[in-house]
Every structure is written in structure tokens, then in C-alpha cells.
View (tube, helix red, strand yellow):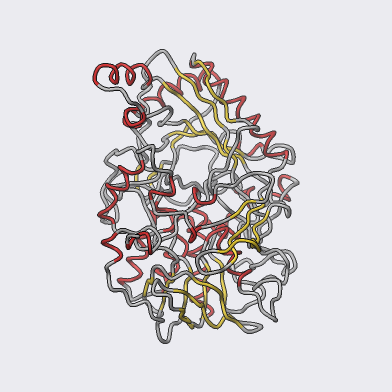
Length: 544
């Protein structure tokens, strides 16, 4: 077994580093998780506080990004393999109506899932914060868009967002995006002609990737492998803020999975974490911020049960793990009898929010996406065949370059029978029960997928495409945005955290994660996660 295998997927270069993983004395704040939420909290607080961050996974060496890119395009590697995921460390189980591919939805390590995300960053719409009131279903957040609006702007500056104010359906903003939007792609121009005939509006997409040099990172150079690897570092990932937090004095400890949170009736007292040498340590602090994502956050709380909290820490409401949500995918694709220049751009540059705010009790909000990466890339095709020379060239010419596709995200309503719990029959490498996911999707989302498919099909038919596949209600899957398992509520009996994301049951514990979302809307969640994390940091600073 290599050193990398022994330590959960790192490289030999990482494994030989001599790291002090002992607890930090006199810590003011302990952050659990070094993804975008945890890293932003740590960066905000580190200048004036003694901050320690504990992450379950390794610290990946940026020099390995090219190697990971090459690994990502090889058919012999599954997506989790690129970042060393899977195995006993990342074990989980499914027991719900639908299979949930958790290890495709996360990366454990410093940077978290921003290491492999696509990088689209939209704000939720105003009605997303008041779904029950405005649409008659779901739940209202205890905060509204106005509360989060200044934090959205700050999050855009922190992540570095390229965008334009050309979306008439977006919520109001206070200033331009930090960078100009990416230019529409060639295939966007084809879509634009069809959409104009159909009366469908297209607009640019805000991206957390550099359209010009920003924050000491280069502009996008067009590798086209944004998900799961950006070799150039132009796409934001949370190592930016983890490293900045360290520069300000924070301590970031990798390969330090937290096993449980020790506590009394009112406060968390220590995070107990394991290290690669088989030791356990206690990290004490005055304040704790749990930022482990929508699955590992409820799992940690459930693992921290005690006489004071027999059903799991911070779970007097009984809602820890409940209301697990994701966005549902809707898509249509086919081919044209002309070049579409796909896979030159690894992200999409145009979208349509025109139908988003038509949502009501019967139809969910949804957004439409115009893909730049439909069909196989020539590299992937070459790696999957056993032909050579002219035969290979003929196959590539015949099979590449004429694909076209649209995608879309659809909201799933929160429901109590969609949840995360502990699997009593399976344990991880430390002997702890693994998360067990019970994922259920309601009829409203499935009906809305059909509606999205109708629009997508009409656009492709207007283009003159031969439609070859449809990701409809029977073929939908998750967008890998796990949300909702420690929901926010003003009522301590209905949720886990209050409007400031502080747990109702514990005075010194906050949760910074998509797990606090009462509803998911249909917008990619990371910008909202970042905005909430900045708000959490301000609340921790204010109270301590």
C-alpha cells in the first residue's frame, strides 16, 4: 500500500510532509471543514482570533493538477478517483426511493467540493426565501433576500465572479460583478437564433472563474476540463481562503476527521479528531463552526449523541438529517448537420431564467442552461477505442463536433421522508456508522422536469437537431447539491439553527453549510453558502 493510499488518496509528495496535528492551545474558534464555508469563516476571523480548522481529507498539492486532469479524462477512472475519494473513509449507504451517488457529490480535503465543482454562482431569487408565502408550498426562510444581499456582493468579490447585468429575471443587485462576463460561445449563437424565434430570452451566466487576472490568479486559459479539474487555478476553489486564513494566523489541520463534538447541556467544549498516526486529540475552543456539508454535518451531530442529547447533538427539534434535498436535472440533446464546436469551453456561458418566477404550488422554479460540452470530446473518444491511424481519425471525424444539448435545474421541495441518518450495520475506518441516505423526490419536481423538457425540445427542434436523448422524469438525477439537513427556522421546534445559523440548543455552535437551507430554489447553491458563511463569521465575531 502506498503512502497515498494509506492516508486517503493523497500523493507521495503530500504523505512525506511532517505535519504537527496536535491541538492548538487557547483557540477562540474551531471550524470543522475546510470547504468554501469553513475557509471563508476562518479567513474572516483569523486576523483577530485564534482559529483552528479541522478537515477530514488531505491537502492536495496544486502541482498535481495537470496529472489529475489527465486522470480525469481517462475512461478507467471514475470521478471520485480523481481526488482520491471512496473506500472505507468515504463509505456510505442508500436506503431511499432513489440512489444517491454521494461520492460523486463531494471531495474530502482542503478546498472541499469546490475542487471539482463547475463554478456557476447565481443568487437565489427573492421568492426562494419565501416559498410558502409566495408559492404556497415549502417553507419560508427566517431571513429574506434583503438580509443576504450585501453578503452576496461580498461573496462575489471574495470568490471572484465574472458576470454581467444582462439578466432581466435576476434579483436586484447593488454593483457590477467584479469581472466582466465570459463571451457567448459559438454554440450560444446557434441557440440565440432559435430562442429569438421562440421568444425565449438568453443571458450570460455568472462564473466563479477569472475572465481576466484577479486576486493573483490567472485568467481562464481554456483547458475545458473545469469539472472535475481546473489545472490553471482560474476557477475559484476554497484553498484560496484556507491559505489566506493561514497567512493571517489560522491553523489548518488536514487528515483530521472529527469523530464527535464533546459538550455539556448548553455549549460545545471540544472537537475530538483522529490523525493518520492512529491518535485522537481534543480541540477545545470558545466557539465552534460546523461546515461539513449537507451529509457530514448531520452525521457529526448524530454521532455526538449524549445523555443531554440522546437523539443527536442540537437535535431537540428532531430535524437533524431531515429535509434532504438536491436539484433535479432536466436535459435534451442531439446532433445537427453542422459543426457546433463543443468541448472547447468546459462550462456554460448562457442560460435562461425566464420561467423561474412562474413557480407556484404545482410547478417548481427551474432554470435552463445552454451547454458548451455536449457529446464526447475527441480525447475521450480516442482513449475509448482500439483503432489507430486513419480508422481512428475517421471515427473521430464522424462522431465529434455536431452535438448540441440543453440542461436545467429543478427545485425539489423539502420533505421529512427525505433524510440522512446513520447506518447501524456499516462503519467507516474509525468504527463510526456511515451516513445512510434516504432520498425521495416529489411529484411537483417531476412535473416541472417535463415542463423544462418541453421548452428544451422546442429549442432543439427549432435548431433542426435530431434529438437523441432526453433526461426526463424517469431519467433524472441529482446535480450534486446536497442541502437542507439542519434547516434554519425561527421556531426551535421546527429547525436546527436560528436566523443567524447558530444552533437553537447550543450557545456557541454555528452551522455554515447548505444544510441550513429551508428550501433549495433552483440556483446553484455555492454563492448562497458563501454569503451565509460571511454572515456567520460576523455573528461569531459579534458575540465573542
